Figure 1 (cartoon, rainbow, N blue to C red):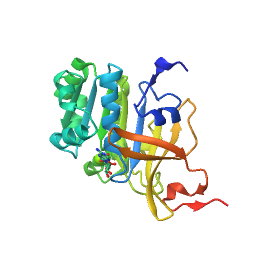
Figure 2 (cartoon, helix red, strand yellow):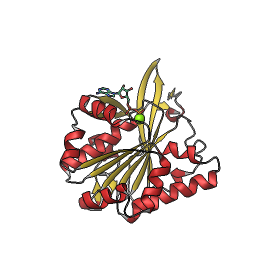
Figure 3 (cartoon, rainbow, N blue to C red):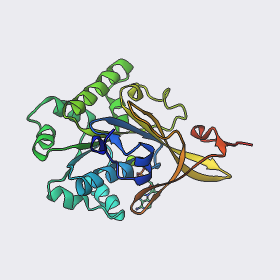
Figure 4 (cartoon, rainbow, N blue to C red):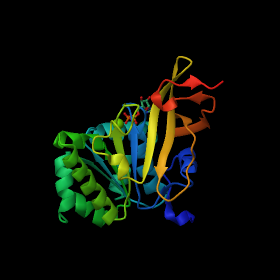
Length: 245
Ligand SMILES: Nc1ncnc2c1ncn2[C@@H]1O[C@H](COP(=O)(O)OP(=O)(O)O)[C@@H](O)[C@H]1O
Ligand SMILES: [Mg+2]
């Protein structure tokens, strides 16, 4: 696969795990408990795209007021407000209902922004909020499909952030989102020798190679930093790993 068909996330170690990045136009779910680093990863992906790849981005958030996002991003050295002024980024604070309806209408502010700005990268923070729309898993699945089809139609590369702390990522996934996305990136807290660490794993990438290892990472000023693989532990994704003898 050539490099031009890849969309780097902008986290060097994670892009290596993904054999160069996400496949351009594909959709990844980033799943993790609160505080694992999903929003940071999303902002890093958009900042990198806008500043390094000339790819305008859209951040759709259902939970963070834009001013808190701008503030948190600045702590990493990412000036999102400036990117918005330059037309390289749009931050939209809305509800899942309004977002879904907007995607259906070509003249909605969100659809216009995608078209007029030439948006190539989208982050949705978080898709877990779609669960507030219905208690019916079949309906939830239809909403997810609707979102994914709209993104695919535009050829957009997207990170769908999913807030789930269940160790069994499939059981916790009521709308079966993991089955319709191309890549699943898991962010986990793991307890090792009484110290909480963060672990990242890539679970599936349609039609490409990816790193099978679970790697340690940290959220540092400047974004996520990926470190070595946990090679001497088992059961990491359960959060309660055992040492391998
Ligand atoms: N500027 C920063 N420098 C270092 N660590 C940070 C910074 N900003 C956030 N973090 C760390 O990242 C964590 C929050 O990450 P966040 O992306 O908001 O997680 P999530 O969206 O998964 O809830 C915090 O717990 C904090 O430890
Ligand atoms: Mg968050």
